[in-house]
Length: 618
Ligand SMILES: Cc1cc2nc3c(=O)[nH]c(=O)nc-3n(C[C@H](O)[C@H](O)[C@H](O)COP(=O)(O)OP(=O)(O)OC[C@H]3O[C@@H](n4cnc5c(N)ncnc54)[C@H](O)[C@@H]3O)c2cc1C
Ligand code: SF4
Image 1 (cartoon, rainbow, N blue to C red):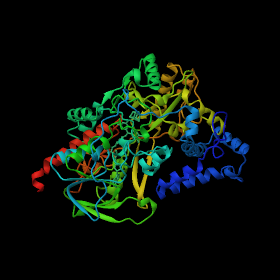
Image 2 (cartoon, rainbow, N blue to C red):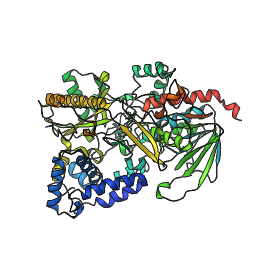
Image 3 (cartoon, rainbow, N blue to C red):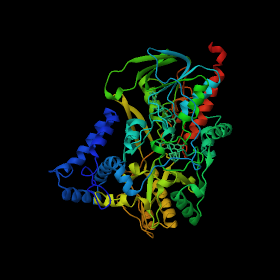
Image 4 (cartoon, rainbow, N blue to C red):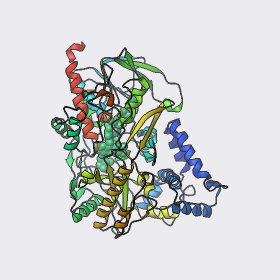
């Protein structure tokens, strides 16, 4: 896939790619691995009667160019998949990063280090079972906040997290290792459909907040109003105090335009030139130098993920955190949740793992994220027919552009400037610079042309188009494992194409000479080519998307048969069982969801604390 061009090494001849990628794939569950094998085999045999790996270098190059020119969507899908894997292994090598000048230099602007976070205590689970007042499944934005709230209210809390504990002392320095260690299934959780959409989530103490971009938005008022009036979330308008408390504790500040990096500045200039509203993003990373490395774990923990904020706070208040513990099933006595059954980590190696029970005297809270929570509810047979339905994901499209000037986007913050001009069309634009390991696959071309595009990476600017989706998907179980599917509607595909056009308009207004709308049929947009692009219609399957915000799979609904939870987060048809994460959202929230998850979790856990005062648990 990377034959070597002047200035960049050849894969396998100069740098090893296949070996590290094969090692990386060991982090993936058997189900995902089986799907990948199928795709990779199809790619391998596409040049039938020869196989790709048996072609000589010139034959491979000819075949790749033919694929890149093809009009058939499935061929582009296979090419993209092959590019994803080869780029993952290739772009992370020091030789390639050195050639491009891509550096990682996490730091605070004044050169100091953030204060160390408080301790997390003994995270190894004891042999046998444990008992507590409230057991919480998952330690992400929802679980960590619930743990802090309930422990500070005097309840005896245990948090169970499937992933391991990492922080600035031990994040893997190799990017491929970091993805394998910090993400569920190596970041390859995919919502099947047309198009298939990757929906990566974390599996680590602190959940997805450890690898997210640190962007902090409050839920928009019109969305909260809809949740109140239509879905019975009676308290949806009373979240201001929760947002404010969390913003203060997480040190949320607005980016300084002078320091947000050229990628954000170009979006800001382009938006100003066409009169579109927006602003620098608020983040929870103080005055960090902004190096676009957030998805691998911040080397100095400048970003206040849950592992360095709410979890230490919960532990300081007496909570016990257990890492590497996957909850398999909720234990019920009649309809009352009385605890959970767990397996210690290592399941994906196929080994039989010891099991244990954690008993909860007061409540079980499920906060496994919008993929993990329905998975557990389904495995436990609770919550009714809506469990796993109403999956919204904010489908997103990378819209890259080439600028005559150097952008060197990795020297700025990943997500830096937002444009909310087209909120009514359900579109939010965010200048987002994706590191080469992830974003490299989106670059145009294949083979030599793709490598030349990589060499030019310093001139690429990018804007993420996020859709507040009406389309929905479903999380289910296939042979006991997670299975997600998603059906992008034609209307939403049209909205995304509109958003892509607006991102292109901003790029051109900021001086870009080419825009890459990430639609194979279109390829490259040149200045003056927008009208033709906007006149075209695109099938959902033609779009190349990813998504980072799963939500809604155990939603609150006023009418119980339409949802899974009541407004207090309790699971329909059960007692003492609650959800406190992004699964609760009745619809797509429309902005980056972390702070809304935090606010929801505060609300749900305070309700539980009010019902189960500490004194009662003695
Ligand atoms: C690359 C990326 C960038 C993002 N950037 C932003 C951003 O800048 N701003 C923003 O607002 N949002 C961002 N998000 C989304 C945001 O981080 C999530 O919406 C938020 O963390 C969701 O919180 P949660 O508690 O629902 O789930 P999570 O934070 O995902 O936590 C769930 C945890 O539960 C654990 N778990 C699941 N099942 C089990 C089980 N059975 N047993 C034990 N443990 C289990 C998981 O391992 C995980 O650690 C980003 C997401 C991604 C992927
Ligand atoms: S941009 Fe992210 S990884 Fe880099 S210093 Fe800031 S918080 Fe850390």
